[in-house]
Image (tube, rainbow, N blue to C red; front, side, top):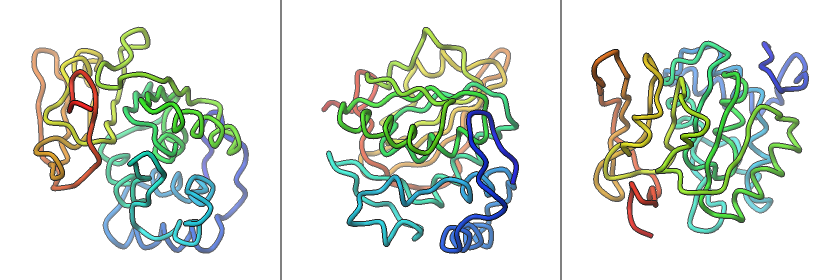
Length: 223
């Protein structure tokens, strides 16, 4: 299994429950071998509340407190695949949550800058990522809808909460040729969107319907 920057060796194979989870995702249509390898390498069980760890390898979202969830592995796979990462990229994540998406992206890109608005979740994610040995993710506390202009431009941006529209600051921080993936639309029901930044314009495509927790911030929903 290929290793990304900032990661220790994970050995020849993942534990059987995680391996079976990844096999199910592959059977369901995930094709990017690097994404599947990243999912096999990340210990989702270490990122969910202790009482729910027996459900860690089911393809479902789970509550992590403060009204937030850890995304289902299938959703993380789909969003990661849609970013079209090849290694070495600079990625911005909006909504750290448990740190699961960031941990997967850490195996696919050069560095991940993640922004979380809830202090307790930001602290937990930092601790969990440290415990997993991840060194190429930096978690910041703040309003993710503003992005991180000081760290821009980004080759890819992933938004892990549903907003009414793509925040303009995130588009501004996307590098030419970069991709932004996130859920946007009505509250409680969105469409997963991919935006590509060309030399003169942005191109948008709809990847499917989805439902995420609210994207809260100056360029999202009000708290």
